[in-house]
Amino acid sequence: MHQSSTLYVGMDVHKESIAVAYVAKDHDAEVVSLGTFGTRQCDIDKLIRKLQSKAKHLVFVYEAGPCGYWLYRYLTKKGYVCWVVAPSLIPKRAGDRVKTDRRDAMQLARLMRSGELPPVYVPAVDDEAIRDLSRAREDTLRDLKAAKLRPKAFLLRHDIRYTGQANWSPAHLRWLSEVGCSLSIAHPCAPAPAYWITSSACIRSVGGNVIPRAWAVLRLITSSNFVGCSTGRSAGLAPFRILST
Image (tube, rainbow, N blue to C red; front, side, top):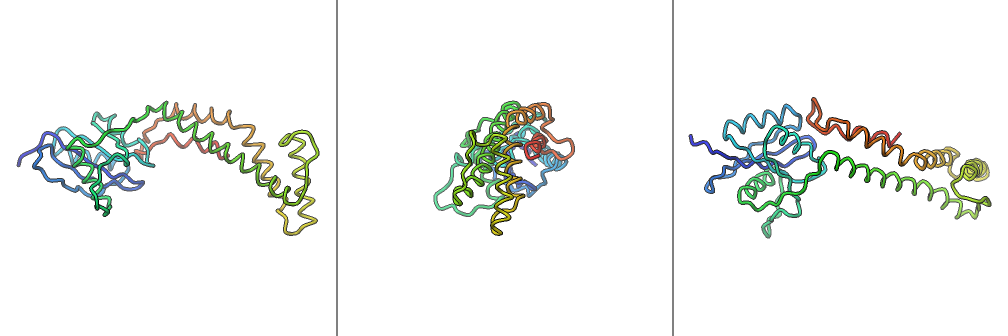
């Protein structure tokens, strides 16, 4: 049996499964679906062994998506060529509306062989840490803004005004807690005291710790091993639990 020197391997990557298809470098070769594999490190090693029995040189490709770049880093660390492509830049035939994992993997392998897939930039570990840090900061500030707007909107509807100097100062936060308790007694349908206390605590916690916590996350990310030891998944997102505490 003729063994091709190069295989182009298309992968449709999901959280718990990877649909795999391959095609030989020869232009008359047919695309073959290899089935579905798991996303653990041992599953990826099993896939590599199976493909190595068919060709010496393997070229992998998959779409950029929510699963990140852990698979790219794992394959390139083992010395294989791996491309990540943008879904919006994948050529599509008019009228081809049937979309399955198997068909997507076969299409990626076919287009990779024909040279029609442009790769996207895969950030380095430090670059991705800065990107995640920026996104975490934006999410935290958005939560802070929402926590501030909720009690202010409720008080405005009831024409309750703060006569102090600065909003969200320690004095203003104490006043919010007192107003919340008074409203709960006078109006049974008003938010419970726990609502006001929670809002105040959220503003104190989030507002005073956005930058220190973000830098703590960055330090943990850059010192983490981004390839999980037992699962093969990225271990770099675990430190973001700090932002939710």
